Length: 379
Ligand SMILES: Cc1ncc(COP(=O)(O)O)c(C=O)c1O
Image: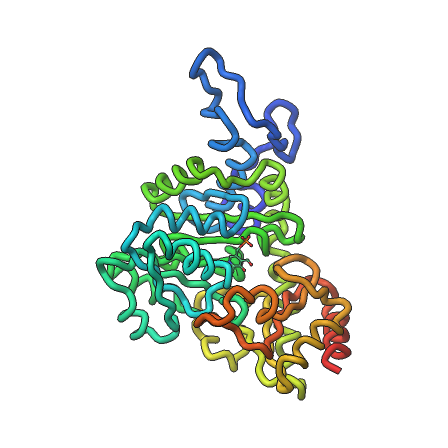
């Protein structure tokens, strides 16, 4: 079973042996009957430690990312927290892309910093600067988000893996925007893949969650230890919703990418727009790297308005088919103003985003309706 869509539908999932139910049942249980003290059935003891529905999801995700082990959590940030507290100690340092998601930056700069873990933002495009920032003794993690949120920058995963490994550092890739259907960072040399499964993996804007995927068994063991010890696991219903969503990930991403590509080209021609940020455009400064490591370019498009912040706010408020809301990756199209909404926590920091920027999460509606909506919103 090697094809992506076949694995998305079947990996880790067999019809229920008791009834033949084609969809494995959801295990809404906290605890498990023991056959005598310590006589666990298939290792199940308590659902913070392991639950069959979560295990099925973890098996499916590991397969889709071509890793050996996946761990799922109650949110993307809970996954990031477990990862960083597993691998970093006081005195260590994290080097991260200067355009990482604002919540990631807040976790690193506001929560981990008081515990003695330092950080330095760097432009991941400037490979000399990355080499200079990654210090062999102290840099524990090189953190890369590609495509990045909300600037849609592209980092060269294979090259960053070489730089990280030369210094004995782990390369972490936040693969939320691409999803494993478009990009598989572990196959390019990354050590850990992070997901906010809230986004494309969930795909229907109805479940918050996160995941870590690794190839190295020993690292997987250490992460699984803190997953249980800190306890921010996802519940069985959330895991079941994600399993259902994974089955359509490929067809959804095909349509997200096609719609976003059309919209990016259309925006490029619009007189009110000063810049369109989409890795699928040949004009994108890292289009070639994107084309090398992604199979398509995804559903996220950002653009800047010539008339500045007020114009950006107006476009967001005038849109009708695009819903004004945070988050992304669902079947419905969303529009937002990162400076005041998703990335407000980065205000005043080196990761602050421009105020004239609008971010679109392009859904899978009919693209002509989306274009007509943007046309009226842009006035
Ligand atoms: C790229 C990226 N990584 C991580 C996160 C955090 O995930 P969550 O909101 O599920 O905690 C987000 C959330 O927007 C994100 O966009």
